[in-house]
Length: 169
Image 1: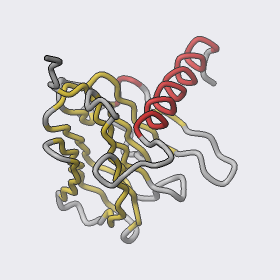
Image 2: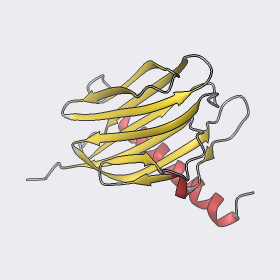
Image 3: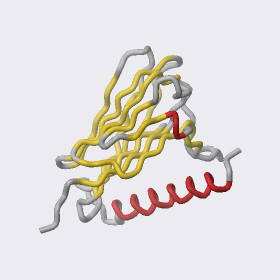
Image 4: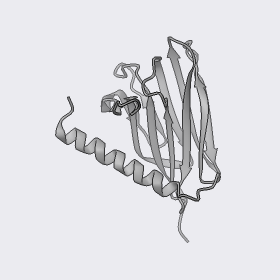
């Protein structure tokens, strides 16, 4: 069971992501600011990459998984109104993936990561998001990767936010 301090941090992190996405996706949002696309996560142990971008910013999700059959996943990318933040979320809408991931990496091009979190289960069907343990993944300047020997092979959602290299005049 998570400690109250951990639960509070996770709730604040979700609030931050929700507020960020709300800011990035106004009611009159246009395709040049947000995009959600469906893709298949394929088992078989082969490394696959799926990528999507907006303008010069791109999110790529590279993985290898085993077990089961293809699963439908979604990738959403968004750019804030002031072009200062780029977000990427990759998730299985049904909640929990039945595939075993041997590796994963998300990379944001054109940004420096300011927030990232990974989950073994997403909120669906009355279930709650279940974050991975912090030691299961590593956050770098532009990548989020599994940690060899610590990652428990369960992934259902990955959320990454990066600050763009946008400079004010």
